[in-house]
Length: 167
Image (tube, rainbow, N blue to C red; front, side, top):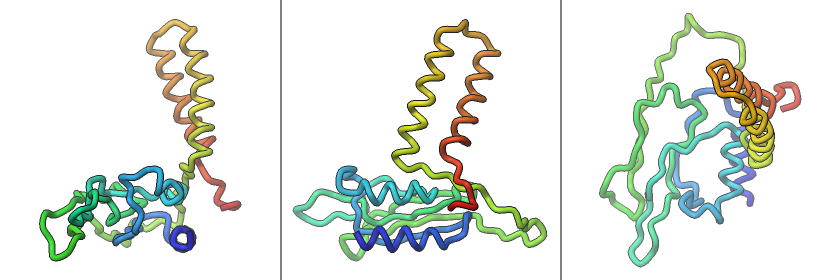
């Protein structure tokens, strides 16, 4: 849909960090069948929805989650939520972030981007499954566990990390 394309294009131009989008996106995140493309667009751009409960309650209709806060930086998030009561069918949403700007620690290095789209998730699960079978046939000890953790870290970098030059 054109809404998804516009949102995807906006996120491609956005900074790698500290992006917060908020509003009525008109995609019900409680209905995973109808918002699959929207969710894929979010995860492909390293965006995370912060609201997970209904935000729109219209009489005679099922509650829906169409209002949200989306961010690509959760490290500054203090809390987010939905307030009860409102002046319309939409419940007020809020997010509190610690957005101090430290101009002395500004770095020119870019934060790596990760693409969590469905095809990458499937590839990650397949590759991890192969490694699990290898580890399953060996003796369990602390060394094997450390190797397995390193394998997970390596697979995350191999499968999800985006080559910035080709992004």
